[in-house]
Image (cartoon, rainbow, N blue to C red; front, top):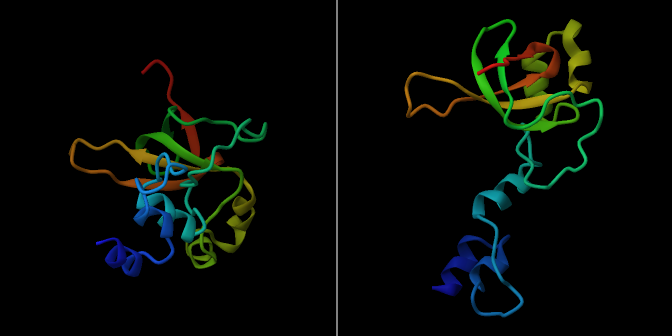
Length: 134
């Protein structure tokens, strides 16, 4: 089975050896490696970022409302500036909004009455307002 996993996940060689070497106490989830392969786009970096830069206003766990769309949600990740594929930036920001790519962006888990829904959004800081007293 170890050889089969090595063929399936060649970029994750240590996953297949987990438990075979004493120096490997644990292995990150496959999703973590896949995220790193995709350059950790959309506020999903698994790497700790501490301390938070002073220009990043909000933090993980805060409840927000989107100023234009009105949806509510909770911040689950952030980037000091937009970290997304160039085609996504071009599609989501008009020529007049290109400055937003250099502002903090947040990954937001959107509140839904459907408890099975786990929709997320990736939005610029200036598009959000914190909801207090929730």
